[in-house]
Amino acid sequence: PDGLAIFNADTEVCRKLSERTQVKKILYSIKGHANYFASDLSQVDDHLHFTVHHPAGKTLKCSVNLIGIHNVSNLLAAIAVASFFGMSFKKIGETLHLIRAPHKTLEPFPGISGTLVIDDSYSANPDGVLAALDALAHFKGGRKIMIMRDMIELGSYSQEAHRKVAERAAEVCDLVIGVARGDQGVRSGKVLNISDPKKILQTVQQFVRKGDIILLENRI
Image 1 (cartoon, rainbow, N blue to C red):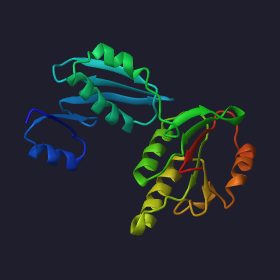
Image 2: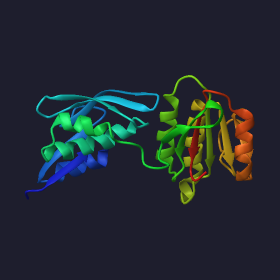
Image 3: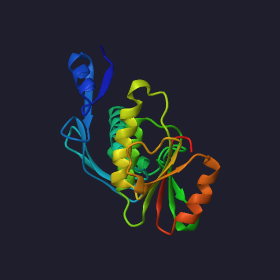
């Protein structure tokens, strides 16, 4: 009875669960008002910028070395917990500057020929790949390239999931390099299929130029 429950107000399942919860609860949101909510969300290159609103009316302008607007939701949950346990907004802001992406999870690093590589190859699921493509879309300047293997273990949802990813990739990317069947639904002019993963590097070296952004997906 004296515990604390924290819910993502942007998720219908979590909202319904919060309505049934009797202990003290905190809701957070990146889409609207909640106990903790974020406004002015943007991704500029490899940094997220947003403002956190505290239940008491305090605000905190944040700049975090992460890619992907969806990560603001994750950060809000952590901020709510830290604030509940007494960490000041000032200290929270200082700590956010120390955050870095987990290994192979939207992790940026300099690539060959002056490119930027975004390594998201730890694993892949449909929502995660779509979020990565949204993050890629925020980058300005160079051409956008995605290299991706098929997503597996999706059962009967596999065809629809690959179609959704392919449609978004066609909107965002200048080139999609598919290993095996990664081209489902993408118009052929943007797709290069490579059956041998060892040939990917050779192909990329021949194609890329300075300023290009390369997204690696799904255990490449």
